Length: 93
Image (cartoon, rainbow, N blue to C red; front, side, top):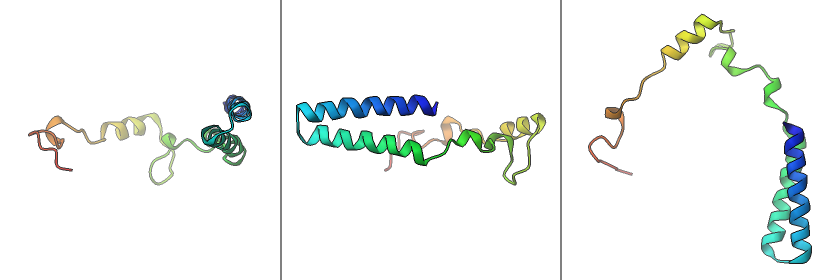
């Protein structure tokens, strides 16, 4: 996945650099800088999928088995239409 992102950011950088070369203006320059920063950022941030999956641990960090996962999902609060702010047409922002 990381390789795909790097290839796409390199492609975006090449296209935006060509755009800047043939049409020097603020917008192509900004696009080139953003493309370059996106490419550089792919080298600094590690892939979070190599970390322990948060869906396999509870809030204390203990591993969850299938039974505990089902209990966690079932204990999630249910939001109904009556709980929403638009129940009576009241949209107070």
